[in-house]
Image 1: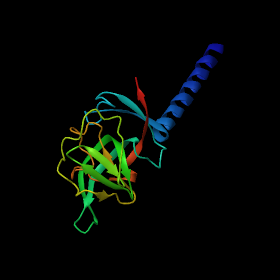
Image 2 (image 1 turned 90 degrees about the vertical axis):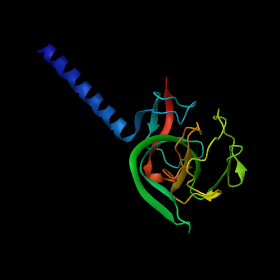
Image 3 (image 1 turned 180 degrees about the vertical axis):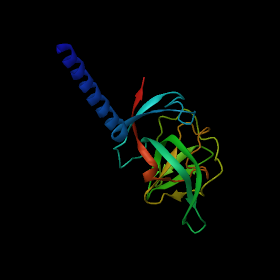
Length: 181
């Protein structure tokens, strides 16, 4: 009888532990595996990261996990143009948020926000291409949206491309808070 009680106590603890783990991974933080080279050398393909799912008020420089199925660019009159794309989960760095103006010098790779060049110590490679050109620069990010770029600018499909454009805030799953060794 004592042995049965120990087994039942252990089973109860195990069930509670699994339940707490499921709650944490569903609502607080989650592990994601990096696929591709767009964030190299900060993140390599195969790296695992932990993202805080409760994070909000993202700032310039934050690395975020995005789940998006639309591209958001601008019409000639600066109204938003949306169209559906295949669903993709990506990891990128926030460069600017709603209300900020982004300018890119494609010759030097310099990125400026509201007229001030940003220092990007995480970059090993310069800006080597313009993708398909989602925007004419400078461009102002609409409220509720973000402009994101990969750290490996020559390999990154990001806000510079008409395939992606601006990222709606509600497409951001969470902020990367830890890179697992």
